[in-house]
Image 1 (cartoon, one colour):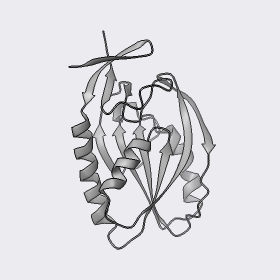
Image 2 (cartoon, helix red, strand yellow):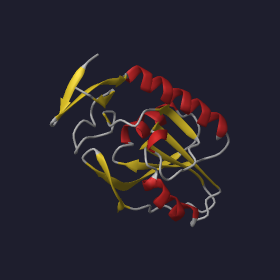
Image 3 (cartoon, one colour):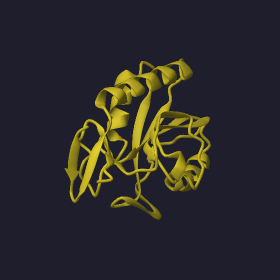
Image 4 (cartoon, helix red, strand yellow):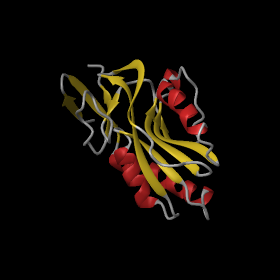
Length: 179
């Protein structure tokens, strides 16, 4: 088991790059089937979902578009409880099939606050695809339609997820070490 350090914290290997890619390829297969003959718009939530969105798009064979928004609620290893929209949605989504891409859903607060903004624009359909979900941490339930991994309520870093800005570039996902 590999151990790394990001800032003042130690992390142990949790999900390998190969496991992540296999789950994303399986998710893409499902999306290719579910959206065959359609042209969905993926809305990737920055910063964390950029690697997930990029890799997912490499496996998609359907016609699809992508745009990015920035929502934030984390400081350090904890949610602040406040959702900030730093970059907003600038695409008309009325009548479109929308798939929101999130790196991780833990408390659910970020999407819970953002989803009404999307539904008010009357998309044809709205689905959520997430790389990681922490069911034990969920306070604000949101309907997750596609999920690569359900994980315990432990802080993770890597593959787009950060600890105070660092660790996003790691190809694997690491879990906060108990040591």
